[in-house]
Amino acid sequence: MNENDFSGVRQLRRTRDGRIIAGVASGLGRYIGIDPNIIRVALAIATLFGGLGVGIYAIGWLLLPDEGKDRSIVQDLVDKNKDNPVWQDARSKAEQGWAKAEQSWSRATSQDRAPQYPTYQDPAPRHDGESKPQV
Image 1 (cartoon, rainbow, N blue to C red):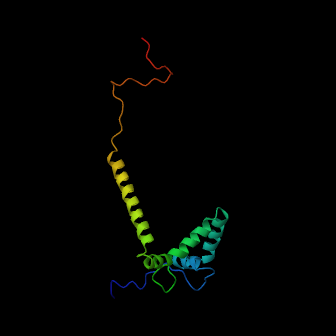
Image 2 (image 1 turned 30 degrees about the horizontal axis):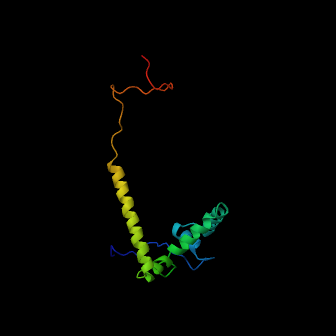
Image 3 (image 1 turned 90 degrees about the vertical axis):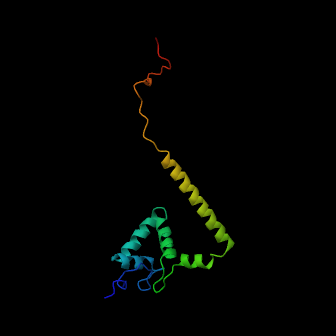
């Protein structure tokens, strides 16, 4: 037996059998090993409370490849438009923003020091509303 044989690996895909809308719930149910109707009920409840279920389902539809395909809708869209100047501009701006975030994070973590505790020479803070000590 070849140790690199991955034919028994389960893959998360949108399925064709048991599909009601796009196959997200049935594919997720098959992958997890539970009834897809439980997932559908959970998504329906999430939809009633703020519409989150519709968003989750839409993200699953965009990111999960269809059964028999290796690429999702988003992957196909990105590959099709990767030479588009608008896509290249958005990508460069995202990379610049990520670099700025990494710089600010590394700067913030490098400036972290041990907490400064008062020494015996520091005057004690006054809490009684007086600003100057009386002599």
